[in-house]
Length: 330
Image (cartoon, rainbow, N blue to C red; front, side):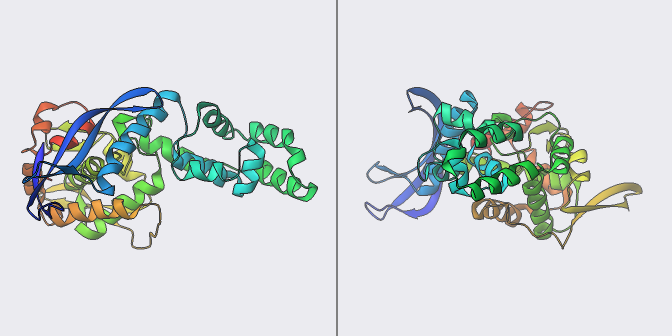
């Protein structure tokens, strides 16, 4: 697909179009099919990319590789260290990594299969204690005792795990959820931001805004924001189990009102919610969709979603995130 842009060609100063195609890319000797976005100068036919466009195919490529080999995503690498409150130096010694190696994995470098599996083993506090004991010679006695206390006292927020199971059900990190982490905190901040910008909304409208935010972000960066999967139903795309999702998020409030003689639920943001889980790119994706659709009525946004060929094609079924590149209204 392609679309016109306001960008000028760096070669001639003339018109530029943006295209996105599927392409086969190789990583560590394996081939994966990813989406690529790029600009094309209409005068010369030459192609060029932005950093944002490059993020799309690299994110898709790395996500597929990590899932295929059962390796941790960067946010999981960060969470494992945060779980125990360990410093980078401490967890590096425990795992026997080189200087700055763990830090690079947190920043997005893809670990080797052996290192990735070793990092994942740290999720189990008993295994973490075993690894600590085997690396005792790397620490002073006082630092060893500090690490021992941190790991022994660490409680992987049981309530958060419980909330995640309720909200996401049996959903796993995969292509079906846009390769996003299953984080109720991030999801709460996303819904809260949508409602703050668009105003209180019925579920029907909120569902469409969520869909467009997630699919726009996937089209631009190769991953969703919410970590939810979407289904095409009678009134347009909706997150699966959406009522359960909204009823169990901390970022929104639900109240029952009478609308057209019927009791209906309307959602509004909790003004007290402050969070830093969303990236600036994710916030920009949300803001862009609300700017385009936030002022629409329920009927208008339903009609807009019905113009999407993917809604018709997948009616009654899950909509793959790869269809983000075929949406016509964003």
